[in-house]
Length: 384
Image (tube, rainbow, N blue to C red; front, side):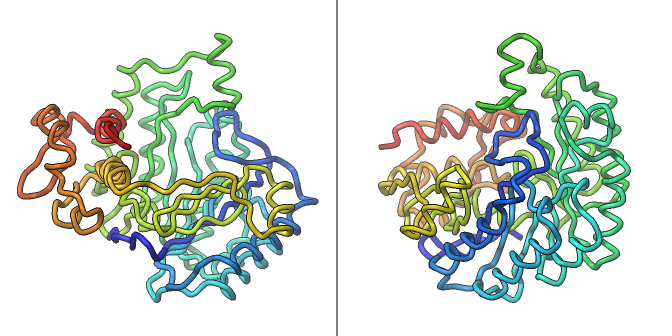
């Protein structure tokens, strides 16, 4: 189940590993390719930043993302996991997730992760169609996804989630359906189904602008999304966030903390932290991150502290993506604001077609789920 993290004392930790074998043309996250020579210095800088971080409470969730954390060597993963074990106190029921690429996962790395305490793997499958995987620039094939899941389970890591992407130019509806079916055959605990986005600075966005690639139509996009919703629900998955589906009890606790606007620590190049009402982001440059950590001890390049109303509106904008809804009393306890007083105009304007407000719970209607970003933007209006 998701938990409501504290506003001030972080119980979630994110660590960014920005390295990849090669940069995928659609990926908008900060990452660099083939920088093995700088990895030791980066891991040392991570240790320094983590040692100075305000880890006053045991972590309920730890998440290592990227980039591709499993692009590190087995020895590098051992060092990283040992650092976390030494410096981070964990709640007895801590959810410890590591993102993995099927093409960079082997038995030695799995053992390093398992011994280090990882108990959940988010596997970047993306597709089970070899042609689509090549178009996405992935370094793995469908067989490697199956092998990775089998190897993880053999090592005792049963909580495996699969990431899938739809609305890829050239992808057919039948290909998407086969990928969903292939994913379900592997028995994952969690499935994330993301529509392809064209993020600034990516190769795909450049191709979109120069006319060599065309984005999916809205109709085609919605057809694929709604098909995923139907197939996954029929298979027993709960649709608990816009792009996320889970077997009961296997919702991503770490990501739920983001959607509930709880506090969290962020360690590494480009990582963001939200502690004590202040949001801070580190520099998105590996070499500069190392230089700053080894110098001043801080790699932050951006910070903001939200005023109470801005925090309440942002919390509502994040919370509405969590499909069980926003509970009025919990929202008041966390933000000091009443839902009706803060969002009354938006609720009146958008209900009953897009918002349902019954028994003190505000949630998206089924028709509003595909356009949740628009609803979130409505909640942010008036932010000061």
